[in-house]
Length: 303
Image: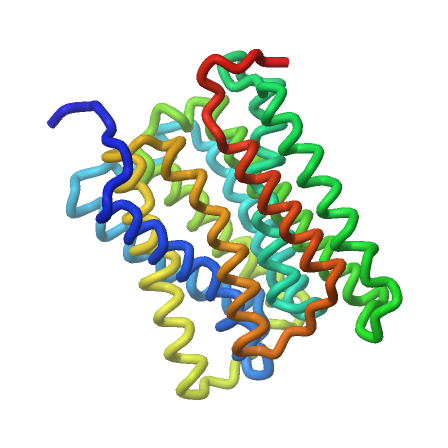
């Protein structure tokens, strides 16, 4: 098979929209089930399911599961960062709305671009991408502070928003570490297995230590855990890697801005999340910044 990547076609665009819908909607499942299972525990269980399914997939494809023979130290580091990210998402969702969480979590491309700018010479930002970074951070400030006069604005909500932003930062750091270490030479399945395995164990231990491991196994909780484990933590990752393998990565990545857009839509529609104008404007600035950062440099001058 040729190593060349294709530009996006109808199939690719349909897959991207499908993935963004899944990723934007996962916060909704976590919030809807929060009375019966803590979001962090929910995330841990779906991670275990995804980890088991990924191991079976690797065995079927004859991809080595002997991860201790590879760069296991940096692999475990990435896994621990992934666990901390998951914990922040779970704790943040207990304090803020799903709409806020999905916007702040998906600031990841901005932090990733900044990290790669300083560590990978060929990933240096152009002036247009720096404009995107500035736009995004301005949007974050507007979204954070613009609703200070709203009834639901309090320290608990601010802490939840900060946890979402912190989760986005940690997600970006895992990407930068993978890109700059020996993990970049491994098959994507092995790198993902490091993250799922270490993160699932780590966040489960945290849930046990903090008393958040109890679960009321209602039909909805069972369905949600299974769907998220099979579809979100396993199948969506396989589809994402398939897209990156067959299509131009820069073209694929630029459309991930649909994820927070769809997430906010679902939050307002299903959960009746409150939206104040300042948050909407801030979110739009964040999305605009993400688009600018993901535009290929081509012949733009790097800074």
